[in-house]
Length: 170
Image (cartoon, rainbow, N blue to C red; front, side, top):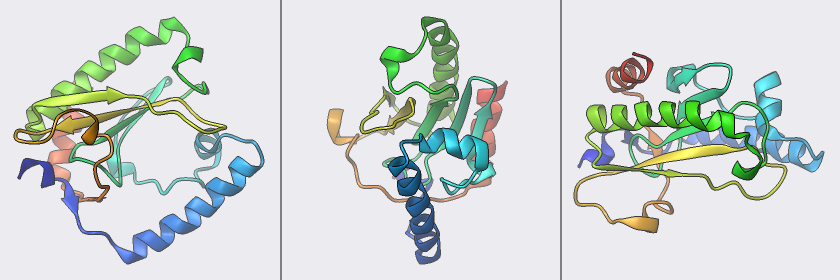
C-alpha cells in the first residue's frame, strides 16, 4: 500500500527520548513561552533529525513529520511567531502558497499521493503557527478521517526523502 512507504513500527528507544523532550516542551509552555520559538533558539524542545528537513529559509522550515498520520505527512513552520493564521501578515501568504504548491507537487510525484490536505490546527497556548500537509492515497478514506488517522513512525528511506528535497528545492 502506498500509504505505508515511509511508515515503520514504533521504536522504544526513540519513544523514551521523545518523552524527555515532551517534558521540556511542557516546562516551557508552563513558563508561558512558545516551545517552537524556544526550539529555534536552543534546539532542546523537539527531537530533531536534519535528514527530515526538506526545505528551510528565513521564513519557513519544512520537515517530514516523525510520527505521521500518512506517508509524506509534512509540517510547514512559519518561523516568525504568530499564534494562528489570523495574525500572519498577508505578505507571507504568497511565498507560503508558492512553497506549499512545490511541496504538494513533490509529494504527488515522489510518493504517488492523489490529494494532499493543507490544514492548520493551532490550538492551546502559547502556540506557533504551522501547517500540515497530509497526503491521501488511492483507495483511502476522504475528509476528516485522514486528519485523525493513527500516528505511526517514519521510515527514513533516504532515496525518497532526497527526491522530495530535490523537487522542492529545484
